[in-house]
Length: 259
Image 1 (cartoon, helix red, strand yellow):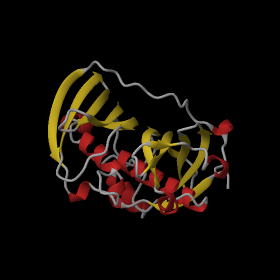
Image 2 (cartoon, rainbow, N blue to C red):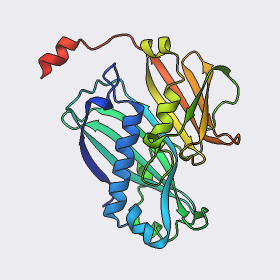
Image 3 (cartoon, helix red, strand yellow):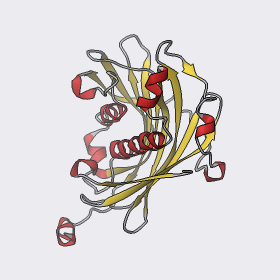
């Protein structure tokens, strides 16, 4: 199995007001597909747990296409591995409309194996022989995206980690960081813009009861960096988001007629 595909039905909570898949939804379906693909290769979380190892995602990029997506649509996530280094597995993906084949989102990601006992990264040498690699299908350079350090600080919010933020590992879910970051974007900007690209770096874990601070820095008129810091000053996650003006909205009546 060189590539893996999974079909999902879009739910109402997956779409934004402008009828686009939200960044959190793209992340959700991508991660689910990666987990299922590793399950097919007998390297899912429950397989690795026997060896006291686990998958961790450290980076993800997504380019969002100007395509309307509606509640009830079926989408297909296609995922494949395009490069494996001694410490990293790079998985690329496409999200398409299941009926039309139109691209909704695409991108790449970086995964590592962590030793659950030492909390240090493990070599990929044991999993590399089991994972097909398609270097000719690399969708983007795998060089780490560096975020601009300059930028005007526009807003800062505090967030205390609660039970709804956690995943089954007991630390903050990857999607929760995205949700926290989006809370810093000014309402008036959100009303008039839509996301067309985001890049996420997950740097450190956060746990129940921790106080996180998210600072929004404006890079230029349509791009931001969101820094989510822990109480000890360490950065838990950093997110780059790029936006485009919202020039039109789907007519709700047209959506109703579609049904």
